[in-house]
Amino acid sequence: MSTISLLNSIIGPVMRGPSSSHSAAPYFLGKTIQQLAVCEGDKIVGVEIAFDPGGSFAQVYTNQGSDEGFAAGLVGEEINSPSYRHALPNLLKGQPFPLKINIRQLEVADHPNRVEIAVSVEDREGIRRQECFKGLSIGGGMFKVDGLDGYEIDVSGSDYMLLVECGNNVVPEQFLSGEKLQAHTRQSPDKNTQLIEIKSPYPFSHDAPFIQEILDQSTRVRSCAPVQFPVRDEASLFASSADLLEQASINGSLADLALSLEAKRLGLSQSEARKAFADRLDIMIEAVHSGLALTKDSSSMKFLEPGAKRVAAADPVEVIGSPFLQGAISASLGVMDANANRGVVVAAPTAGSSGIVPGTLYSLQQQGIDRERIIDALQVTALIGAVFAEHGSFAAETGGCSVETGGCSVETGASAAMMSAGLVHLFGGSAQQAFSAASLCLMNTLGLVCDPVGGEVEIPCHARNIAGISHTQSAAVASLSGFDAVLPFDEMVVSTQKVGKQMHSDLRCTARGGCAATPTACDLCG
Image (cartoon, helix red, strand yellow):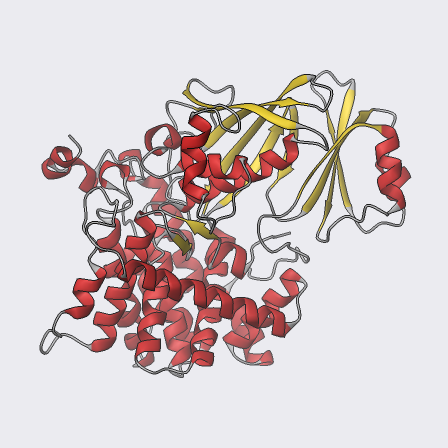
């Protein structure tokens, strides 16, 4: 079973910068918890968010906008709303309810991106209760809510869900007979009550007979909607490059295969899926424009000045320069500048690597490449990323608490690998050459550390995206010219994950090693 989606998980989510793990996931966690906490007639009257002192959130929640994300989600703001960034200061003033953020030892601290959220709720009769949620960010904007008032739950934002609290005498099959729904029963810690999780890829109809039966037999029914496209087919679609190569040889190109598999995953027609890819491209291009429009006065970056416009306007470097390379570097910096200023970007596959794919595609557009061909390249890019995701994580911080296991190799390394395959496809290479180019990129970034200065997604993140642009193009050219990576892509993905786990924790997104520990970096951070 798998819920990996090209649009949701690889060239998505659409998010506010600067971090997919620490900005996007907190927003989705807050939005989902707000829906689960409030039933009809209820209102939130207070929230406490708690981070473990040994986790990543405690170190970066202000620098990387985790507090803004949680706040905007908890009040129901949309990602692109002008009011998104007003939510946090309003909540800190008690409007529409007070928000407190505490650093304390969590009951369960099994992940560096673990959070506990206590929500005080008042019902229509003025009676108050407290809802205690546990959740975590798992990389690339993906998240889980896995605890509610002692119940173990499994909410990941990929389905429409009902959480039914009821007595132990209630049997789900009694009211779900004939319904094509997934139901899981969770026992309360004291074994006196149960919670039934009901998942559906489609919205629940209030007129459905089983809804009334649920209401009659429950003490409380909670609901939440998916945060992205609902997943309607959980088959394992992206298990290996070998499998996809075989399918592509039978069913057409990698671009066609990507479109077909994503349409299947999301229950869309191929024309609907194609439009979704086109829309995602447009958001990427808009992020480039947003970054190019930034000035020193309008930017809120801590260490860097906006550099995209300057690179775009510079005279081409003789001999070694090219309009395509320079344009891609400029555009990638534009996205990273927008991301660092907490603008709307596409995690591709993460926010820290969000410049490589749109930078390359924007430069192709500037060179006059047909839009339909660019969308094809984007589909292939996402498909290669899905194979990576099936074998591991895009998070620079995953695993046991303070044992962060990815490094930048799973962010800019993965992004360059994805985009290099897209370029190979665009310029007529075979499916095998596309995966070979992707493998080359992973070889060249194996063991690349994650070491953001001051916890900001600026230094060396902008530079790593520039390097990713170069890796993308050099690997594509080498592969198209007949160079064989020899080592299969699947094996390089596994090796990337293994090497990441061997890194010291100071080199895995903790801002304690590498670039972050240089004397100049320490001086910059005070």
